Image (cartoon, rainbow, N blue to C red; front, side, top):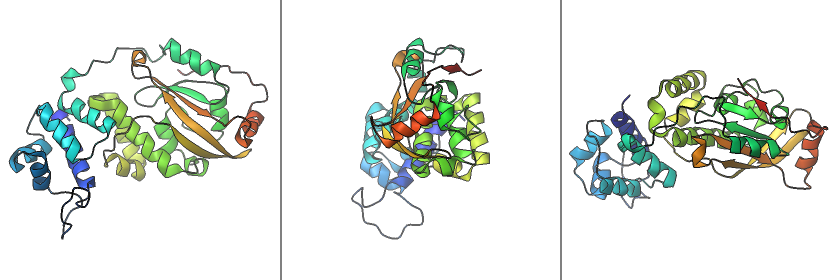
Length: 277
């Protein structure tokens, strides 16, 4: 699928997610959810025909002024707006460096090694490139530790492990769109999305929403089969020089029950990072 088709899909999904009330329009009878095409066109100051061509993938390279107007009308956040620009102008995006998956950012690897709590380095597809000792100990029964999306959507224990599974699922899908950008057309990305869509109706449902939100701080509540419930602060760090790789950390509040329970999982306290093949 070329970038103009991706742009059209994104615009259509975000239009359908906007309520007439939010846009200040009368909420009469509507056969479909969200705003009508003509309503978006009027609010953005363009013709309905031109906007229809955008959604149908028949119009390439809309002006930056129009993109700003569409971002305003569709109530796009900063990550979603950046995604909109990438889809409209994919050639402007700096091509990712062809990095061997084994070539993990040294900076991220050092940070991961020094963390006394679960930490993992992932790429744009959320493939796990490396993790410290505590990561697999926390996900004790996980069968898909090689990819965070597979872990959430395809692992049978995920819903028992994540006490806020729906929030985690939405965040993982939105982060995938944010990190992939115009690279959604790449064979490896297409293959992953198709695999997840076939294996999980929930993934397919969330993917169709076209939400775009980068990695953000959050509270994550999990239930370990041995030590019980734990609460972590979720943080992600992704320097520009890391070429799409990012460090994800789950750290407990100092002195908390979670910190004590985490210590029970790894009495040795040794970091011992592991690089994945």
